[in-house]
Image 1 (cartoon, rainbow, N blue to C red):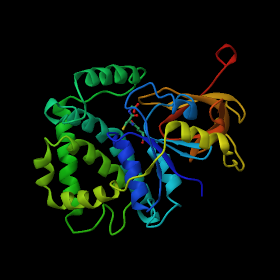
Image 2: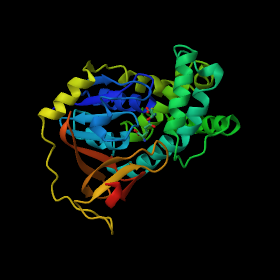
Image 3: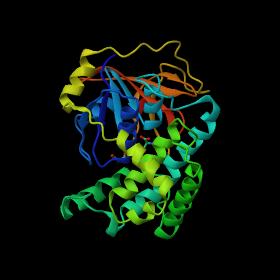
Length: 313
Ligand SMILES: N[C@@H](CCC(=O)N[C@@H](CS)C(=O)NCC(=O)O)C(=O)O
């Protein structure tokens, strides 16, 4: 199997979700640390525009968004599936709610002045981050949560988590993990990384014990690789063939030039030739002088496809 290359940065919560999934399944991985803010000259050639973190690369295939990364990792390594048949819908739906709704509570809580901890090296870094994220937020369709909404959203969730785990089960849906454990874990990791809310978690013993078990998965490091080395890997590889690629979009056929991007925030799209679009994923083909031809894959849920016409092509 070609190496699993994660493009990420240490402070990124969705990267922590990917790192924990890799660790849980016992998978060796390569670690490309990207800057916390733009520019990212060794990442954008791979994605063609998408700028959210993390992305996972396997040879000349690039997987955007941890929802898709989870699906790709699920048949690799060892251990229980992230999507057990008995609780698949519940686990996926909880994971999505946590990744999109509880996420905004986590952002508010993590960036409280008392909870920012060592996130920023100095005030210049904080100002540069704010400017970068203002840019990132352009075109966003979501609302930032004020503290009076964010705090109860989290504490109510934590109380329910405690109740769910109260029968001494190991994971949210029983003795084996599901995708919901990894989504929930990375949110708690982010909120509690700042230290100021430690007492809130400590007051929930079952959730704390579960959190400790999950955190161990995120501690297994990848082997360092540089961005240029990762681009060279893409350049030397061929993308995995797309079998029976079809488009379920009424007005956009396979072969069309399209922009694909998130529909909620960080909406910067990637441009390429549509290879397939179905309920599992969207795939485009694109090329760059530093990567050769790559296939870039996105989840279907939460992403939009727009045809690029004439003058915009
Ligand atoms: N749904 C996405 C969310 C990714 C996301 O929001 N990542 C944050 C960092 S944790 C991000 O992209 N921030 C802006 C950036 O890194 O440029 C996923 O599951 O991967």
